[in-house]
Image 1 (spheres, rainbow, N blue to C red):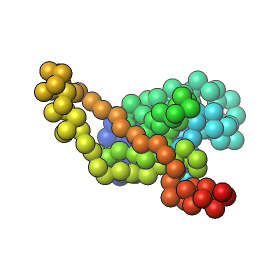
Image 2 (tube, helix red, strand yellow):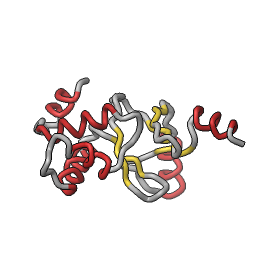
Image 3 (cartoon, rainbow, N blue to C red):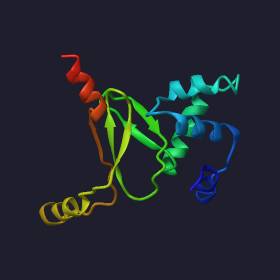
Length: 143
């Protein structure tokens, strides 16, 4: 599904700034921070403020058009994921690459919450952090 179709399906306006943010994220090789997106946006939108970028990133992530990366450095980053099906992400903390993980162990976790805690899961977020294959090879070569 293309970007315009995604926005229309979520009843979100396809504003020039929103489209530019999505284009920047779609072209990135990994996740980007709000300030990085803002710096790239300033070439086309001279007077754009950082709060506008934050607001649009938040709206797009709520609509699940983009993915929030909750990094171990306690900063928030964003990634445009082309895979619309249910899946999770492996995030390389070195090169910023984000890869899809097709496995989801939520059924077991839901059973554990229901049986042991007598609770009910309503949502989940699962991201795995580490070093991708390329970074591992580069790290091994530098030792």
